[in-house]
Image (cartoon, rainbow, N blue to C red):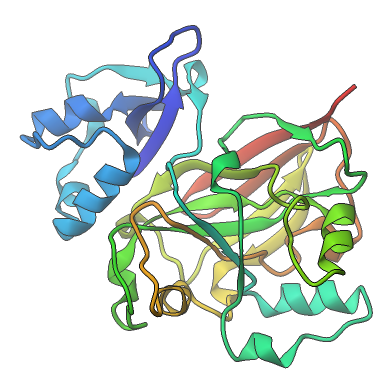
Length: 305
């Protein structure tokens, strides 16, 4: 099941939720589909659908069937404005790939801290600055060095605390592609103080193009690529991750509750950013991040005149 959150341009109807039908390149109204399935609960948000699907042990995903058979409102993908697929109250971004942290620090004359091998570590991002597929990123005025980060996001599907690694998979409601945009010059300046990143990251995080439920995605083996203006820059695999999502969930939930809609980012896959490659984005660049089994997250970067 692929869940999209979107708007219809030229209307004041606000955010809509739909199921993605890739066979017809359409998004189908979720409320109508659920009603046809006999589900009368008020599932008017993506996070509600994710939580319901987990609560029913994936019955919704299994019962959805062929979307073309539903008599429901539907919209061609080219006629909608994509939003981040989930409304979230928390964004935690980990640094879970050894190749990334090793290369990034080596390029600055540093070694990997021993503590990185002892526990998964994250920073808290800005959950209020999420952007969706095809939305334009306005380059922050205070930065001269813009970068992308090729990541996978895990979306929590139900509330829990003190979750074991063995049970953690049962709390995953879905996955999405994540671009952790980075103003590198600002990021390194503020982190030299011993805090952050903050302004180096908080201006925007792209998520999308939609949310894919766990029954449709294999988090142990999926190719991850980044193309800039059609040129392949990054090519990795989620299978190379050192700190798995179940380990992240177990760590995060120690004496702390997690909630439906919480976002856990994987951190950058090895070779998945300009910092590692010594290549930097320019105004007007189109950044396409692709994860096998999910789709393509595309955004253009534009500097203010």
